[in-house]
Figure 1: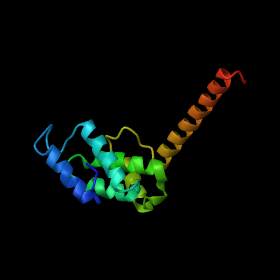
Figure 2: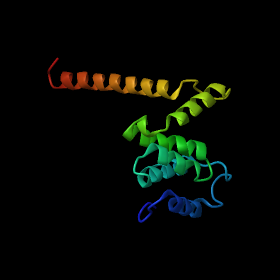
Figure 3: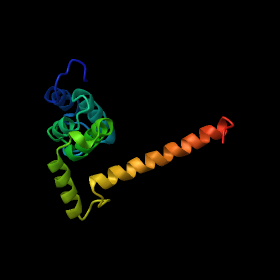
Length: 136
């Protein structure tokens, strides 16, 4: 669906045709729809987190989940430096106020935790490789 598409608006139209009056209610969507859209937005915005988030929130249907996944994919590639600081502050503020959220961590705390977990897993994998190769 991303072939010959130069911007997120054109991409949105293609997905609207695909999911119009299909699946669950309009505001909701299935994971396969959201993930597919997120990767398509990631490609069309060339991995720019700010552009990916803006495109996602203007896509329609389950925009909060779509923005989270598309922005997260782009942020994982390029880092959070391309996300305006005021956006990060707004999300952190909303997270603290939301009584239904699963986690009260800030975006920085979440990113640091994920980074730490990945470094730990990398360290474990290196130890396993050394052990398999006979080097201790």
